[in-house]
Length: 254
Ligand SMILES: [Fe+2]
Image (tube, rainbow, N blue to C red; front, top):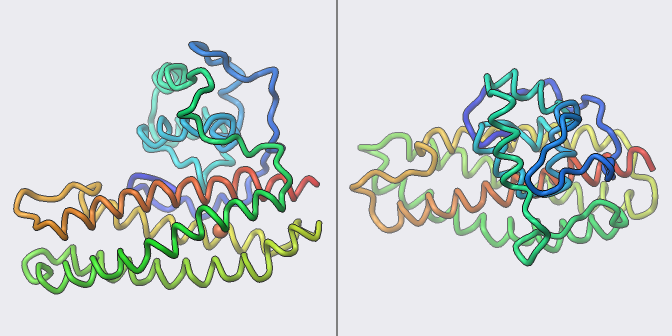
């Protein structure tokens, strides 16, 4: 899932991934990024420290649905200088501290599924009604002179419907199978395809809103909607990252 409006990578969700646990011996120490990082999957590199996701996002590199690509391949596709990205990653490899998100690698898959439901599905269900109300109101009041707002409303409604159905599938079928030790099912590919589509809608919304930048004339609701959309995108990226790059690879190799 990309933070920028790149063409949907669509066809890569099933690229081979290495085990989510990664290689601790290759893990970067603060201030250094080993050359071996270049040949490792982006998703695995982010799984070691989620703060690295912000660096990939800054360079327009998809670490959620495109997490199976190697760092050097992802850089080549986006025309990013590998050395620049490595320098930024070095700066992001901060010592472990209170600002560091929990490291879910090595968690029991059932526990990780519960975490995703309790943290990210809950956030999604709390946030979508707010976004739907904002999008409908802003499109109704301002859509006649800013047609992009009507397009945002259409996509927010599509995203809300898809996410609700997707989360229900995971909670009723996919995650119970994972808890029962039957996780390496064909349903995982379907879930990844749905992530890809949701990510595409989110990228379209980002483009339609000039990367969530309200114009000077925007009213308070318009501004609040853009802020909430950006927050939602950040949560969606971590949510999909945890599934595509940590949970699903763990149950596929289990
Ligand atoms: Fe999912």
